[in-house]
Image (cartoon, rainbow, N blue to C red; front, top):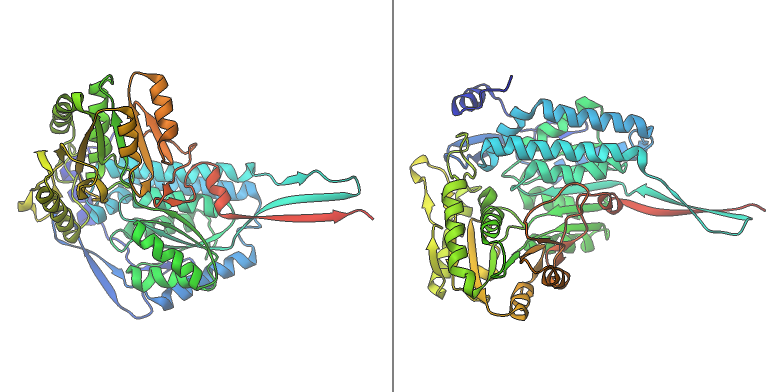
Length: 499
């Protein structure tokens, strides 16, 4: 029987919930070594949220020491692959079994609709852990071509201790993108979630331990970036940092790696993704793709389709269709409302930043077609309505800066060459799309678009079989797919002579 998911259901669940806010180190919950805590404000209503341990360099030292001890002992990396697979699959099932709890924790932290947290974030988190669990007993070494008197084995071996720093927009999903391949490859991990979204990470680690992950294989330290993320990236006993977040902080992470032990770095950073629509396209399909691609998760998506590059003759009709889709299908409401498709922005400071960027764009001459205003202020939450600005040029700030809010910049073009020039005129290269019925043009354009993922006549379609990551200042290294395993491994050659 399906559960009666209603606002009353979630309110009752919340009243009984006791979120855990301590670190998870070496298989145990632990307060900060300083005893300090911090309390987050709930995005959906501005009320005080959970209290969390305020980590520091000493807590990072403890977590790294636990991860190093687990790695060096071989308690996980030397375990029978089939047994490791069973543990990962048990972990994935535990995530599904605790789906309501994890969804509620996610929504309390980040303000997205709880049904989206349940049906998208929890599901994809569990699927990610399962995907990499299934892969463990299917990873092979290689034998290189040699003379008969020699044998060269090329082994793929885990790097060691991985520091994973994850963002607040899709915490569970991106945690799975890092934890799944890193742990499947045999590494130990210290996870530093964003201070805005730590609750689900702590619970994921608990569930992993209960499923059979040995103590020290997965550790979680909560706290602010300067106080925990920076010490993790500078730590001399961390072998790699896997980071998802802003380009600005990604550059700092690279610097910390160079300043310390030349640790490996993998970065998935910002985006300003172009969605190009030619006049011959199916405008209804394009309008739906643009609206959902830009406004889903309140625009807090690194590869959101925030630049609409549209053939001038189709701009007016397409904008009208985008507005219709937005008003009819993408309901903005309290996150516990079952009808909500989008919810609150992450925090008041970020909401004010989004609104200030909108105001600056209007001063530059960007013309508002609809939306992009604060709404539901009476709730105390941080809500901004989806909005579109039209007749823009690509040098305007709304077209160049990553806003991370539900704001679409529409830029008209007249020729294919102009459209491609505008699309590629950005420091980012995470994703893009082209809509046209001319398949020659679609393939020509997609090959020329400088982005890690390009869609043709669709947007944001993916699964764990396809890698995700960017070009240019959108970073390097890939999450998802079998290729994600490679970045958490080294290649070791073992050469034997048969004298």
